[in-house]
Image 1 (cartoon, rainbow, N blue to C red):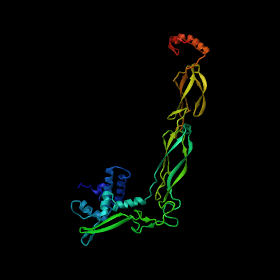
Image 2: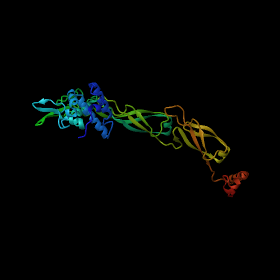
Image 3: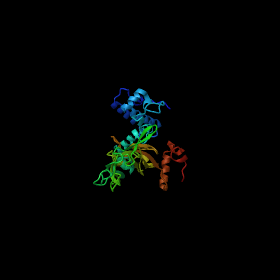
Length: 385
């Protein structure tokens, strides 16, 4: 058998610790290693069970006294081949102890300390589950914010029974089998002693109460599924795949617990004119050869509307220009991104005879700058007639 750790060491207290100090220490350790907070972690699960076993002994004055006197052998009959089992009381020479407490402490089974924990969890307030949703919006709606209506189907408390599960005019009654404890204790006498085990009451499923006349609306569940319309305010500057959390709009909780949330993922539809990088808007601006060479004052489309912009002389194909402050408002902040233009110089096609002659004349005039030698936009200085 593997050597057990000292129970005081497990909870991090001394032998002089009071009952209240032992209880607080156990809660801290149990919360830290609780299986719900450490899914799939076998080490945490073992430490959680170990803490439960330690608390079961140290919180009981009788067991604590035997543990202080004899160590683990004083509370575990299988440890060291002797000792008196926890919770023992003599009944005509036989020992009476709760087998469910021992196995529940070790393995989280259906009795004793673990069973009491299970019942406590069943009746404790529980937060409702959170839901997920996707909200499609346009490029401009993402830039400036908008209000959208979201249709959500969620679990809510039954309006007729107010969540009790019992029909109108009735209420849940104390379980006649377990008397409201949620547990059933059975005793079995053997030649080795009387063994007691504690299990979850199957009549009330550990809740301690039963519903004789179920609510017709929710069939005794205490909850119903409802489809609701929820208004969602989407802030300016939100980007694609960002998530907004609507607090308390998810499934309603149980036993008075809070409602869950709705996690809304924003889906920004692509724009035919613009693209985005963070808070800057990118677009292409087409200019004719003459506009690029001579410069031009033109109307530039932005998400804020058309803006008058003066293009300088000699702007080049692929050159990038910036219009400050005409981008997307910064999310949850001040300031605005910029509008970034990439220049596209359009080469003319299907020229008339007069246009061709004009270009040849232009090329001749530019000959001293390399055009006639094929170093400019006219290929190799040789032109088609």
